[in-house]
Image 1 (cartoon, helix red, strand yellow):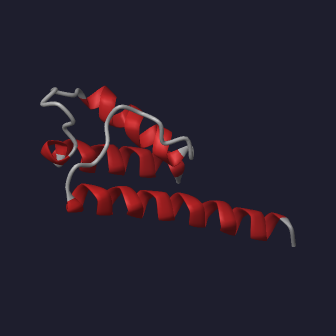
Image 2 (cartoon, rainbow, N blue to C red; image 1 turned 135 degrees about the horizontal axis):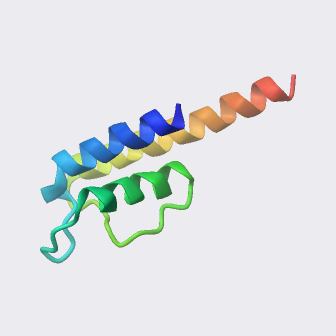
Length: 79
């Protein structure tokens, strides 16, 4: 599930790449995969950050999915 989320959101970040440019830099596909991986891992520290509403919403959705999967996993393993 996490690998699918990382790939899906990396594709979304790449497709909306103009919403994530900090200083006009061009980021590569690997940069967006790395950004998606850090968000999915719960670290979230990287030099790419959303600069528009749509970019922020996509990031929030990924963070909520990540949090919910951790909550569900903890719930089932503590029964």
